Length: 251
Image (cartoon, rainbow, N blue to C red; front, side, top):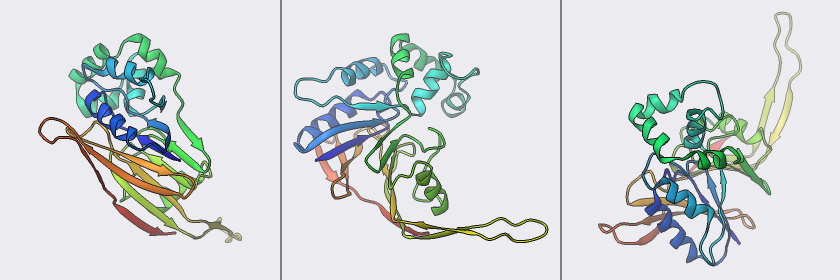
């Protein structure tokens, strides 16, 4: 059985509908995870939230955790933190702040506040950014030691993330890490930690790129990752394709 793992819907209802339709074609999907950035500053945002919370007949109910947009929304409404959504202002400007306020009602904000930070299933961590924060952006260019740190914080062998919006497979080969302490007087004995092979998967973005929704299908029984891209809209028609961007690093 497989998991469908999504991120970055960002209030794009049409993109989400295209992915739901594509997931229905795979009858072996047993769970749908939306790992953050469900909401966004779009007029159909509330309609999207209601669509996710009330699946239609025969559809799976998605499991949703917080992402960057959810965190900014909670800060904006004063639910978390004590300041302004400075990251949102710096990235998108005050106009987007107003739109997010207008399009995400208080009832939905309360629902967002009850979301988990992430999910830990089997040996897999599903999270928007990383174990550090929702803003932590992991990419194929992230140094191996940083990737390993994010995995080892939760003792996960597989980390699925969505903050970057990229689709990628980042493999960490087995090896060892030696740590030690150096003082002004002497070098103390170090500790050697063995590292088993692990991987970080960028699940892409459903709604960030107009007309192109990307997500991941994962089979935990055989540890197989399949990258999916659904093209939607009148200009491109409706189809799906396989997209894989692997990368390996030695620890």
